[in-house]
Amino acid sequence: MEGKIIVITSGKGGVGKTTATASIGAALAMENKKVAVIDMDIGLRNLDVVMGLENRIVFNIVDAVNGKCKVQQAAIKDRKIDNLFLIPASQSDNKNVISPAAMKNFCKELRTEFDFVLLDCPAGIEQGFENSVVGADEAIVICTPEVSAVRDADRVIGLLYAKSVLPKLLVNRIVPEMVARGDMLSHEDVVDVLSIDLIGLVPMDDNVVISTNTGAHLIHNKQSQAGKAFRRIAMRLNGNADLPIEVPRAKKGFWGKLGFKRGRNK
Amino acid sequence: MEDFDSQTSDKKGPAAKLKGVGDSLWVTVDPDRSEDEIKEEINNVFQRLNHLAIGARVVIDPGKKGKSNELIDLLEQLLKEKYQVGSVSLPPEVREKQTNAENRIRQRDLDRSWYQYSSDVLMLTGRVRSGQKINARKHLLLLGDVNPGGEVVAGGDIIILGNLRGIAWAGQSGNEDSIILAFDFRPTQVQIAGYVAAGTSEASEKNPEFAHVENGTIIVEDYIEANPFGRLPWPKVR
Image (cartoon, rainbow over all chains, first blue to last red; front, side, top):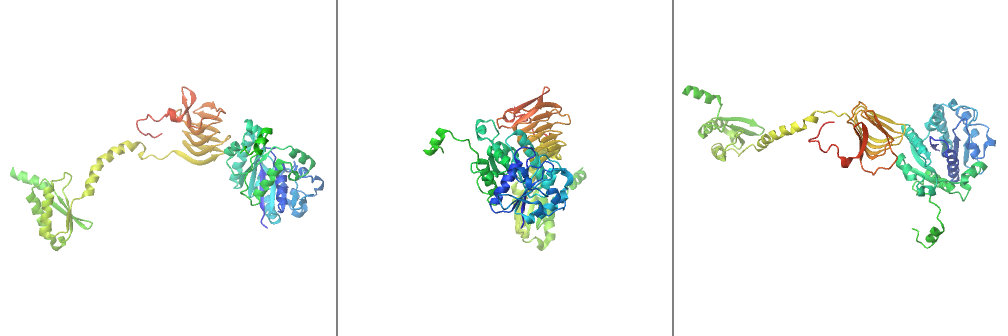
């Protein structure tokens, strides 16, 4: 088995890396792939909480990389999805307990074990970023439609190119109403500056907060627009690259719906 | 006196000379001499050639001044009848080259300003992203974009065939004549020879614009309208 290692990064904090990692990982596992999601944010772990697995942690990434346990021991199986595994971060250690060389070897081992490995990169471009990127094949750069997030994403894209990792862009937290009013950058503006391939557009969704707090999977929520977007991103990663990218649209008012029913709204 | 005259005429050299050029015989005649003199000399030379002259290609070169076609026709007749040469012609290419030579000298005077000029331009392609910095010793030509947070610095001019949204510092050597030109001119900040101007966030009209120093301030103008170099009498090295 020759798996693919994808690092999910952004530069800026709080743009939705952890949520995206958990959701894309779950969606890939639903497509019958063996998936590992790895929390690289050593010292500030959250991915286990988002996935509702914090009470099952015995070993963590530091133990696995430094050979204190096997990959199979560190990987925690998800409660609901069979093919999904989590390798949590260590909460007590420091980011430099893992060296890039050791991480590279560990990535080789992971490739033989899983179809997809998603690395949840910490914010910033220091040691934690170096460790996450060193073994990766591809990268998903997450960016929200804000000027500061675009600036940081741009910096990260430059660094990824320098390490010959191919970056793809995910624009998160789009509020279509605000874009329509001109109060928010549109995804075109973001793509214009960053000029890399787009892998998906995810709208702002209150369901994200709900599922994060309860530890339930976002993609299982049928009403969640963000969940749908993440499922489509997973399909694109899983070989279905031509799947068209859906642009989040503002909800139509009463008259818009009426027009749609009468076939005028084209 | 007569001796003296004959000596000067001797110094002119023979009335006709022969040499082999490629696969043809090249006959240089002196058109100042009389026809008889030329004929005599040609007879002298071609008699020595014997059978070598039969079927040969002969080029008659009457020198720079040119000569009436009569002489050429006369010589052609003589050579064909008496020595059975193959063909007789004028040297056409050489004539054209000589008339062009003067023009070319004039052209070279015009071109001299960059004739032996090695380039001082750093020409790059691609996108300068946030956190990246490009330093050019003299001029910088970028086929690509400068993103917000990217920096381009040059000792001379900065020409960006694309979007400029980052920081551009031109004329670092103190050259106030330097310009910053971009297709889409929306920089965060520009600096020319120590003069600083903050960029505005307003969208440009998508026309190429350029910044230059005028009376101690930086001024941004539409490049096509202002056409700053259109009035130079001839192309100059910058």
